[in-house]
Structure formats: structure tokens, C-alpha cells
Length: 117
Length: 157
Image (cartoon, rainbow over all chains, first blue to last red; front, side, top):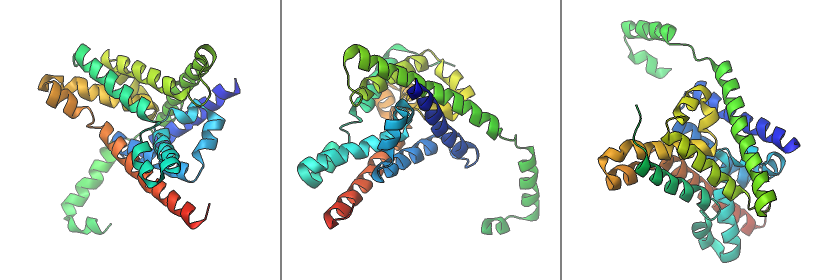
């Protein structure tokens, strides 16, 4: 049960950070998302994102910042196995499920649904 | 501030006038909304993760993939039925920041440009907004990975 509460608090907290960037920093949603992804990669590089995932579970994996962290983790994992070229081959290793499911479902949606409004 | 000098007095007056008339952004209210909706989406994610761990034998580490895929499918369906945009209007960053927002931008872009044809419309515009996230994510991950490898090679960390 603890996990749910922390997922709610941390996930909500990250969204508040995004909201502050949009309202106070006057960034567009696209800028906000890109900034959060870069922040995720940097935090991952400093070794701070994985402890957060351990602690907050989906509260840290569902926000887009985890995309940056996963990109880095995939790159580092492959780099340890096969050297520097692993950065290129491994970068999408973990995020592949997210990116490809978004492409596949998005494409299917375009086949099925008509634009609204 | 240096830029302000280039405007004439009239322009400066207008800018001040426009600033007064601009609707004040309700920062606090928006933040609460973002907190609640973002928190709920993450809690749903957590529930899905437990469900996949307990019923399908995923481990804590591998359960992230089906969880994200399910959230993306749900968000694409909600986008298709036109519900997601209504929620997003209320929730602000609460629906944009989670991975569901990423799926929403892709689905809505591809549905919207459907009339331009499947290749140029759907295929070409799908990454219109999501592309920036992928491009910046990949590039920053690349830089951080190189930095980390260099540090390791030097013997630090």
C-alpha cells in the first residue's frame, strides 16, 4: 500500500514541476516534455534516478523523465557488453516497448478514428 | 532588458497595458490539478505493475514494459474517442508529463493529419511533437553515456 501512496506523491510532484515550467517558465508542453527527458537522462547519469524508481515505483517510471533515464540505461548496459558501439545499439533497448507501442497504437488509431472537432 | 529600449514609448505603454489585461495564470490551482491527475495516472500505473507481477509472473524489473504499453494503449483509445483532450484541459501538465501524454501527442497528430494521406499525413506527422522528446532524449542520453564512459575509463566513479 505504501508503494501506491509514494507513486501518487512522486508522480504528482513531477507533474507539478512540469506545470510550473509551463506556467511560471512559460514553456510550451513540447519544451516542458523535452526538458524533463533531458533532466531524466542527467539524473540517471548521476545515479539518482534508479533509487527514485526503487522508492516510488510507477511514480518515477510513468512520467516522461523516465524515458531519458531508460535511454541512458540501455546505452550503458550495451556499452558495458560490447564497448563504445553499444551506446548506439543499446540506446533504444529498454524504451523500445514504449516507442514501438506508441507508434503501433497511434497508427491503428489513425486507421480507425476520424478527427474530432 | 536591453531589448526594451528599442521600443517606442507608445509600444512600451501598450505592452504594459497588454500585461495588465492578460488573464492571470492560476498557478496554484493548476499545480494542484496537475498533482492530483498526474498522481492518479502514476497510481494506476503502479496498480497495473502489481497486476502484471502477480498474475503474469513478470518481475519487478520487467513489469515496466507491459505497464507502459497498457497505459499507452489506454491513452491512444481515449485520444481516439476525444476524451483525452477534455481531461488534458482540466489537468494541464498532469496528463502531459506522464507517458500517456507522449502517446496522446503521437495519436492526435496522426489522427489529425489523416486527411493528408497515410504516408505523408499519418506517417510524416506522427512524430511532429513526440519527435522533439525522442531527439532530445536520445541526444542527451548519448552525451551522458559518453561522459560516463570517459569517467570510467579515467578511473573515476
